Image (tube, rainbow, N blue to C red; front, top):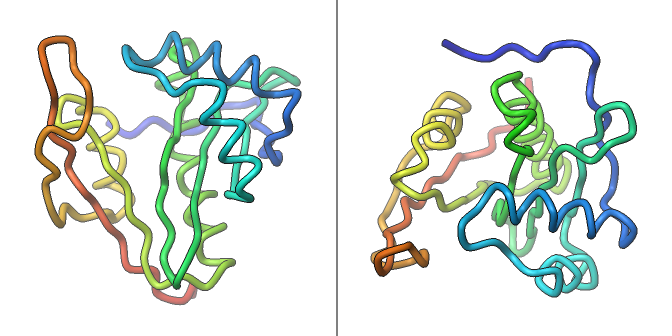
Amino acid sequence: MVAMLQEPRPELAAMQPADLEAIVAIETVAYEFPWTLGIFRDCLRAGYECWVLRLAGEVIGYSVLSVAAGEAHLLNACVAPAHQGHGYGRYFVKRMIDIARWHRVQRIFLEVRPSNAAALALYQSLGFNEIAMRPNYYPAKHGREDAIVMAMELLPAE
């Protein structure tokens, strides 16, 4: 079953330093091994495509997309657990693909944990394909977990 975006519509906005506290709060709830405030701050400073998803003024999601050398890499994409299952993740990732296209990149990459079945299914349904495995990539409760590397070729929009 594919979650359809429900009203009210979320607003996509460029991430601002003032958003970082809310982002880190979501990251800490969503992940066992979260990114730090410093990582998000560095991504903003580096000029990455950093975006937030707001619903009724509240940050409910965020993403970080790096763009270089004709390629994009979706480094982080998250919707707050309390807002998952409503189609916001699908909407958000599609917008990140649009931003990558705007940069005229040829492909977009990402890594995902094999244990993250919902994200894996989302990415596959959007057209990402598994291209490699990175052994022991992610920290895990009992050691390390592999990463599935996925990619999508970005043909010009029709």
